[in-house]
Length: 495
Image (cartoon, rainbow, N blue to C red; front, side, top):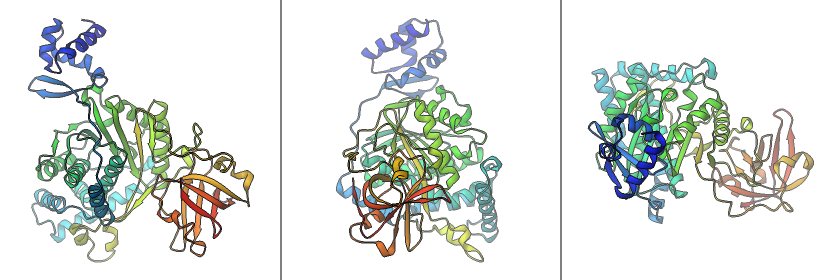
């Protein structure tokens, strides 16, 4: 049966059978194709039909996905999550599982001096690679102590970082009672474990968790940690991960009708790919994203990775997806330059884990504590974002693309806060954007000029839009950027 006729036959079959085995459809359709060939033919169309799949031995169970209302958090749930995120501690269950895995891999106590010294060396090697120029990086997790170094130094912050993003999704109405999630480049399973922890905190949700990872060493850690930590409470089902390079994956390998696809700290490690090629890779995965689903791209907060992420996002947008956060294009269709957008989120640091504290004994102990939460991210969807609840008036507010005309004068502008504080204890500096400027623009507030009318700048969350009234425009020739000086005469308020 030709492919088009096969799809039409499947659509008719769905009208009568919302849940069926693929072998049943093959018999009903009287096709001479074997079930595996039929599955490969229909797979690209399953997401558009809102079908989910589940292996049944050598067969495949297909089910029509039930529409869901968003899982919105009530005030008590919000308060509980915010309390945790203000002073986050990595769950004890995860810390203990990491310690147990170290003992399993080394045959020694997790805090044995020899084990700790080897983990320290692995941490230092990884940090050295991360600081190299992108073309010279050779980050690898193929050796056991490389994975142990990752679990000790990076995984705790990455776990809490992702819980921040889950809270962001909840606030935007993008969590559902049952989520189908794919973690692309899962590593040792930090994202699945973070999802399990977050759902345990709010209750009333479940998830099917799918993962892709190419490193055998990471997959060994993934299986141990997810078996030990995630899924034991029955909220999540962690499916066996697919061992595959993200660059060589077919749509047949990706589960259909996904509610969330995650690329956390993985795109920057795909050496040899341009931003456009990374955008094409993300767009390929998006073919399996449900219409109500979301994609999260998360990268480190440094200048190189942050600006690279914005270039990737621009490429993904050209492929037909829409950017929902953190950017807000306040003036409609105009777009800023992604290569000038060093934007990131900074959150409260995590408390050091017991393993970090053990590694930090002795000289230069600070090198083994990694408690900062700083990251760049992008939220993409198949549907356009809703129009802003409030838009600036062109008669009262200047676009950032026109700042050249207002040098050394006071203006009113509307802009979104796109970074954490880039300044110091006396002078606060924030990257701001309205979607129009081709050069970086920074809002600067010196401690001396802080007043009740302008200190709102210091507490605006990343991605929040605000009115900046009576700010003084300056040009910084060293960086070819513009500064908006917030003075005692200035007023900052939410847009």
